[in-house]
Length: 346
Ligand SMILES: O=C(O)[C@@H](CO)OP(=O)(O)O
Picture 1 (tube, rainbow, N blue to C red):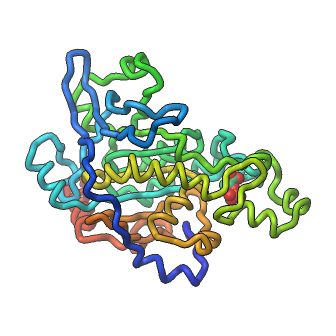
Picture 2 (picture 1 turned 135 degrees about the vertical axis):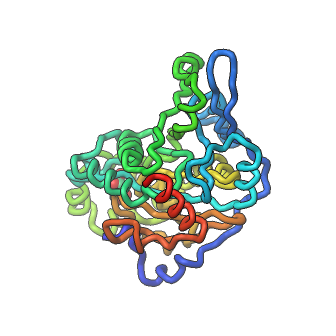
Picture 3 (picture 1 turned 90 degrees about the vertical axis):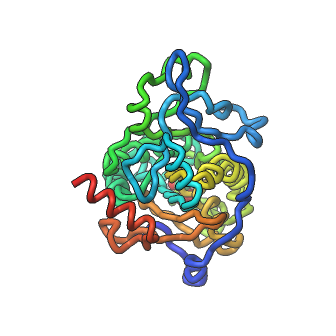
């Protein structure tokens, strides 16, 4: 099954969904800094919209791994010299990979999951590995995941397949001590690392009083139409839960405030998240209407690729086949990256 199944009426929209993002804002840079105690990795996340959020969201600047930018023309270069950074600015093309987590134990049992934190099934693990194969030639400089284990497992398992062999490292910012105790003391090691930022704002929509209920039994009890409305409508929340609109308020805000700036500065980003948090982000990227988003369904463990260039997102496809070949519409730069990678790793 394809990763994003669209109603035929929407399908034609997909290849042309471009939009202007807030491109000209001032963004924090990622830089590797030597400090007396160890090496800090500044991922430059803004805190402007973070006020009032309750956990895990402040001061990502003192974290420890490397978000070295991967040039699309030189996949194994390190970013520390100015000319590379200069090229990065000029190229202004960045890959954005979205992937819904692999099958979870509650997907398997057909239970409403929402913010309940359940792990992947064996099939989900395999899907995540398969997803990793499909993106193994696409550069990744930073990873964003929700705070839920199924998304984090998916990101980590997918990265085991990546050809660059960088190590994804989860940033721990819950306390000063957590930050201090997870410092890295080698610049080389940092360059071979990918920071993984976890954000509750990317969590699945909160399903309210449906969490833990069986989907079929709920449809039998409340009626198919009602349950479909709860599951797929834009603005009708399930009992005491979040509508897609409410979910979008935090997920899309986080995307605009924290992820878009990274893409603007040339970093290639992967987001591992959930059916509905990703539906809301795709609605934003593809400019879908509240009617169109009703028909947007995402499969577990199938990555989607967008290219961010000159303030616009262009969908480059979603793999329907077992490998990435012939599935993603590569840009010229991605093709060059791929070729260089082949030459250097073989
Ligand atoms: O249960 C959930 O959390 C979600 C995703 O699995 O379900 P639905 O497809 O109904 O939005």
